[in-house]
Image (cartoon, rainbow, N blue to C red):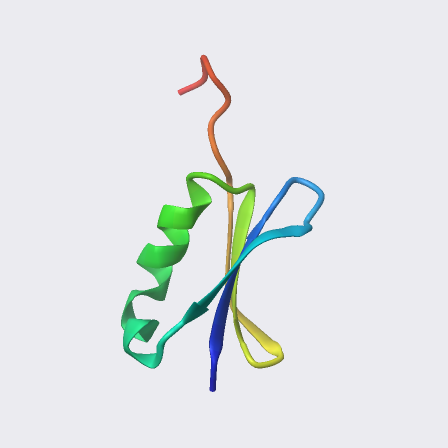
Length: 64
């Protein structure tokens, strides 16, 4: 089954969609975490099922 990674904005709208190959499956958490640096949230879907959801997003300037 195909894996799709979505980068979401603060309103929960997708602003990035990326297809992941089957050989990337062991690394989906790392891939999603890398995308989280530039998105409010990241979700990975396998068909109709969300298999990973990370929230956090980029840090505002001046915050650590």
